[in-house]
Amino acid sequence: MAKKATDKKNDNIIKKALHGRVLSSDFFLRHWKAVLTVMVMLLVFITNRYQCLTRMEEIRKLEQTLEVIETERIRERSTYMSRIRESSMQELVDTMNLHLKIQDQPPYKLQN
Image (cartoon, rainbow, N blue to C red; front, side, top):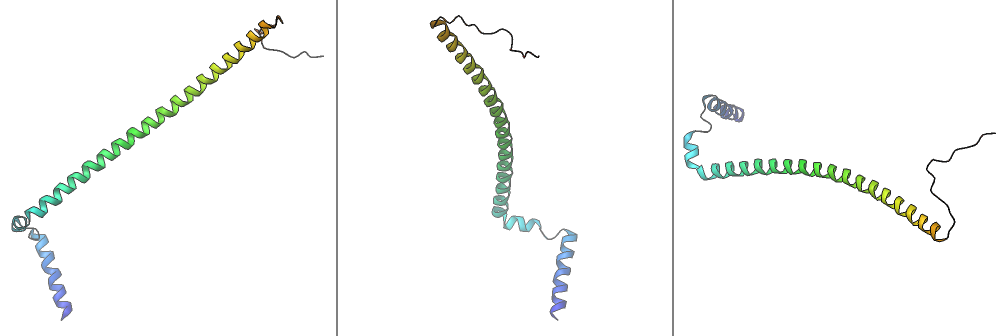
C-alpha cells in the first residue's frame, strides 16, 4: 500500500514536470517576494565572485611586477655598492700617496 502511494506521488511529480506544472504562474504569484529575494541573492553572488576573480588576477600581476622590480633594485644596489667601495678605496690609496691605480685589464696567469 505504501509503495503504491509513493509510486503515485512520484508519478504525479514526473507528470507535472513533463507538462510544466511544477512551477506554475500561480506559484510565482504567491511567492513573489521569496523568488525576488533568491534572484537578487544569486545576482549578488555572481557579481561578488566575478569581482573576486578579477582582483585575484590583478594581485597576481602586481606580485609578478613587484618581483621583477625587487630583482632590479637588488641588482642596482649591488652595482652602486661596488662603485662606492671602489671609489672609497681609490681615495684612501690616493691620500696615502701609494701611486696605485685600478687595472684596466683583468689579471692573467703566467705559465712556465
